[in-house]
Image 1 (tube, one colour):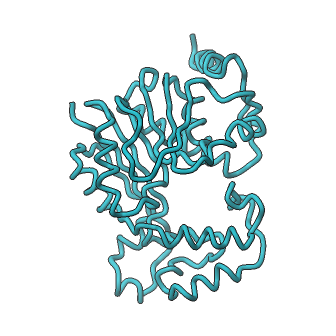
Image 2 (tube, one colour):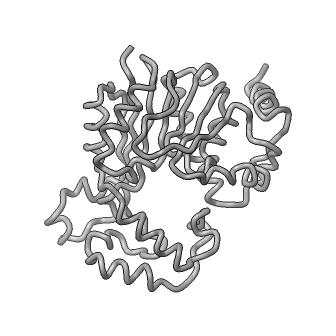
Length: 288
């Protein structure tokens, strides 16, 4: 059986016989998470795990789109997405509208969890997290990473990605309303808030997501500011240190750069690598 035939056969089994069509995708947010993020996660994990035998966890799954992409495109027998919100409740509707998928695959399930509580799942083969760890309260990081270590089987693998990192050009996550790089490091907090709350206009299509489904409303602006103020300012080096200290063996790290050149006044205050490192990826293993 060829690769295409195997994929079609798996698609039919995983979705209860219902097909899905990636060419139907019309939403850029859905496309980015279902295609790019899911494919990058699968590539990173499959280099160290046999996904056809793996029980996986999506830590901080959000709306569940990435988890859906991983579940549909791999042969993993079980993938659980967890999050402190229930944003994933809308996934069946999204899957229908964007893929023509009549139901999510039975191999995929979701749990809402309470922040800071031990994970209600164990004996995992792999864990991944996509642009989540910058949102975790810094004091909780050691306990959360220790819990990930606990639930992972010996020899299991974790893949963590953060983008953008706080000190990078758009590490504020406010770039949809403030396009100037490093504005969050140059402007006082009050000025930054005035820029966000005073924004008038529409978002570009590629900048729309579920949070901005109703446009740039006052509630959306206030949500952006809350998200900005709760960022933990985690750096690439700190992420690696946290996982090393928890007992993980670091297998791979990658640091992505952006082309913007930091202004001299920021280079006088911060290390150049800190300002230009936009993304970190980490693959780590729990020793057998």
